[in-house]
Figure 1 (tube, rainbow, N blue to C red):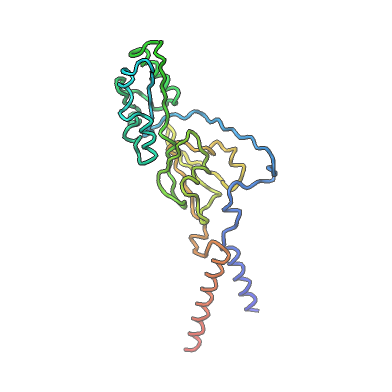
Figure 2: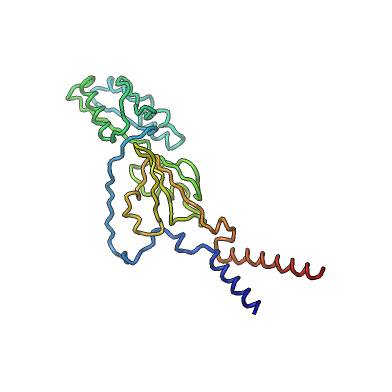
Length: 268
């Protein structure tokens, strides 16, 4: 009877200690979402408003006023800065950073208040000032203002900790995590946190990435300066293994040690 009871306890420990597949599988279908069902998601997000420490690429083009244009474009060009950013932070040196006062410094134009503006609002402001102060109306002026990629931070139980960059205007949290090395089997996908900056402070948003319904969340798409935090599963803290085989091996090792100890004590 005691042996039978011990076997049951051993099997229960084996079952409860390994990580269930449902906790490590992304975007599982729910009962409401059946196979081949068309899922309509809102891809158009609210315009992003610039924050402190954002890095911008600003480029001015005017085919008929090259001499004037050269006064505004940073040495090396915005394109060079963007390409260098992919290879080691070139845009950090050649781009325009929103400082602690919310300003950027543009050649000839001086300080411009950028904090809280959208990219389109900032572009329109710069273009208007250039047309008013330096270019003629028929100068065929073309101004582009872009973020230096989607910069975010990953921490916790993830493949690669630290700052990550995606050189796109829009990315989902699943794409962001994949870009940062993914989440190991010991990471908890059911409660991924996004720590997001707002003008009034910081908010924490929780997402369950194991459910397909997460695509409806307004936080499914990341924003610049987001922090993605993934907690470890209890199995890692317990140290019992993440798979059935690993758990079985751990339990057998513990059981063998206990039996050996008991035998040693009884012989004394």
